[in-house]
Image (cartoon, rainbow, N blue to C red; front, top):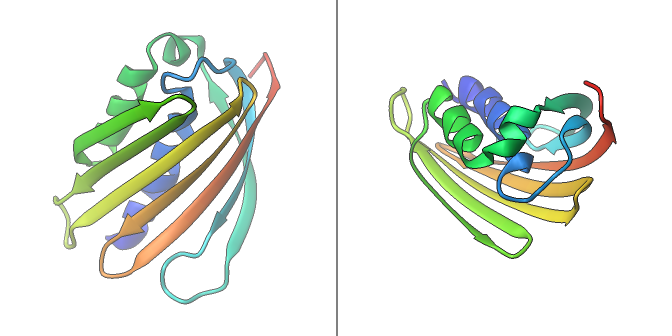
Length: 136
């Protein structure tokens, strides 16, 4: 169950950069580093994600939808200037999972975030996201 939760974390966090931060819709590149929470070596990989105009128009709805789709409830979030903090819980599986996210907007084309997943072990994933181009 924890591996599914880690995958859900990646999916949820990938959609987070739109939330209330007036970011550019389009293609975003991400560099992701994760410790997987089990003492294994740090994993680093890259991917691209499309931020649609629809999600950019109503980022809070996109944020809540993605958490809900991943099985997380009791979602709380707050924004202070260029920083969004979010917490959510998933108690539907074999283990309870808590997720804490801090996202920082450096510009409308650059964000960074840290996601901490707390369960029987704790894993930390960082995302460095940069806008690439308008077309996805």
